[in-house]
Image (tube, rainbow, N blue to C red; front, side, top):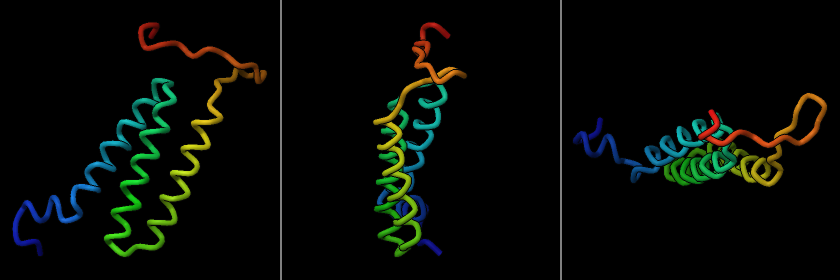
Length: 96
């Protein structure tokens, strides 16, 4: 049991909090068709990797390493396509 609420909230140096914030940002940004969402996903994975190293979870490290690689790959290949496979321009936030 943690000695204080501070120890409970920050026992992993805030890495879990940072990872959660980056993941929420990622989901929001991808939801509005912004490719920087993949960057936030990669940042979340990097934070989770550090968290899992501290927590001694090899599976967590490997899973998040794969997720980070997939996020960077998706970022590099991001192109919106219609039903026929033609590239389309996604609407900007002001057009919603």
